[in-house]
Structures are given as structure tokens and as C-alpha cells.
Length: 253
Image (cartoon, rainbow, N blue to C red; front, side, top):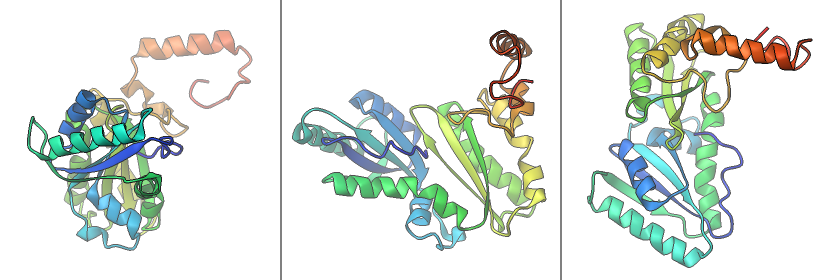
């Protein structure tokens, strides 16, 4: 869900933070109401962002969605957003929204976005963070978070390795973060890789989402791309950069 630079919606932007039982329904609501972006995270992460030293073991599992809209008429846009929130909380349709708030002005909107954008830094203060950026079918996005927790619990490291997930609903991107409270831990890393990438591949997802393949995952590229696709990439690379001088030794050699 971390998207620096997306915290500003313009002069007439409005935002709402929906606390939900079933986060999947938020996407349906957003699509039916023409909202422009949606960011998902458990309410637990709001507590981490607001108070980094909050005990991770006390974090709850309510889901929240941060929705941003923009238009040419601030008053009209705000009225529509209020109606959207009222409909979402009334129980109409398939969504089950427990609570929500609409920012009254840009100051409040920026404050809400600061919570969202501060999550990553706040989690880092708790320990060493293993970060993963993946894409998954929407119904399975949070399933990965739950399965990761179960895997760490079965290995006896759940108390020292805390898992959280947040992401972009519209893009089906999940940022999975596992914080090792005792610092870098090879046991935790071995539990996560390659298991996590294989889990994503079996779920018909992609091991690389908005941040690209990076320098740590090229050897797992085959889990998301067929051999023919990788061969085509190599052919294009050799054609456009025969001397290998453009961003060398990163993904394709």
C-alpha cells in the first residue's frame, strides 16, 4: 500500500478510511462508486504507525481501506462520498463496513495519509524487516498473510517474527512484511524463501508487483514467467543492448 506521492488528491480531493470485516467487498464498492484509488491495511498497522513502540502482540485484525477521490467540485464530491460511506455502513449490498470517516479538509486528509505512509518506517523501528511485493488474485491477498503467520507459528518463531500485510486493492498488490524483533535471522529467511514465492506462483500470482523484480529475485523469475517469456526477454535485451552496457548484471545477463 505504500505509494509515496499519492498522498495528495488536489484541492477538491476527499478521502475515507473504512474499517471492514471483509476487505474484498471494498473493491466492489469502489468500482460501483467511481472511486479512484484504494489502499488496504489491517487496523493493526494504523496503531503501529501512530505509536511504533505499541506491542505487536496486541495488534488486532480489523481490515481498513483508504479511499481517495477527486473531482471539480469539492462540496459536491464530499456529499457523494458521504452518501457512499452511509450506503456502505447501512448494510446495503454485499459489503459489511463497521466504521468509517470522511476527511473534512486537506489537513485531515493529509493526516490520514501520513498514517498510511508511515507504516513501513514504523515497522522498521521494531526490528529487521523482510519485505515482499507481490500480486495476487483479490480473494487470496490476505490468505498469504495468514499462511505466513501459520508457517512461522509452526516453526516456533511467531513471537519473534511478526507478519503484516497491506496493499493496493485496485492493483491487487500486496506488501508482505515480516519483522524479526531480534534482528536479521537466517532461520526466518529460510522459512520465507523460496516458500513464499512458490506459494504466490501456485496462487496464480506474480512474485514481483509495482517495484519490479529487483536484484534479489531474478533467480525466482521462472516462477512467474514461462521459459519462452524469459527467452524473449533475453532476445530483446541482446538486440537492444548487444554490449550489455545498459543496467548490466541485473536480471538478464
